[in-house]
Length: 365
Image (tube, rainbow, N blue to C red; front, side, top):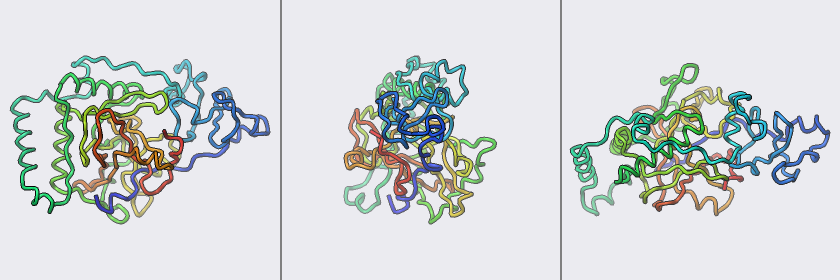
């Protein structure tokens, strides 16, 4: 998808902190600290001390695994219960480390329609018009199509309305469990970066422009989702990986999976942020203008697509989605696109790092 697609795709503000100073203050010897899960005191940089009881836990012994040591306060599962007696950050940490399957969102159409603010169900006339548009877009001979560059494809929703409800309920379950509201677009909140700061022209080295045909495909995907024609994806809970996303039907290479959305903020405001899901939106020549997407409060299914362990060939083979930043009408947008054919039941993974290799993925499964 061009050289621009190889630019930075994700950012991590700061580096994982080393051994906590509390360990030396408490016992004078880091070797005295043991992981409550495995009993080992090895891998000290990845052995955290609970800010409530000073007990130790490896980030890779928690369920689900933590990708890195949190920058702020962290509380073990015991200290997080009951969550009402802790701060908001401690309550969030409780969800992160307790490997309990979340309560399922009720499979009731009216509740799901209200949760996602679905406009209406498609009428037969709408479906017919959409089908004709697809046929016009895909027309032409094989010889003619080879002369054109490869285009993005819109996702194909599951034909069964009941199955689409199950897909939406799975996402609603994950969003509810993480305390996030559903959003399918970038949001600009007071005190964060304004929309006027999102200017693709500020990208260092330039940003790939989404051509008119692909922009129409993206708009078509958004219209389908707004009326309840959902991407064929299921969010499942895994005790090791946490929330994961699975294909609920085969997905073709170059299909738009989703857009990465959330609150937009300046990177400088997130240098000590504890979130592990920030995504690069704008990597400006002037660092003060760089932007990130923060999906902790408002997000869609993109937040739950997991990263690969790109330190091993086996991990890299699992990657079936790529993350590409585009200039869409002068603004920066981030799309997750299938980078090969994906089978039904296959989990979706993409490389958090792209080309910068600054995010620690060696504990990813």
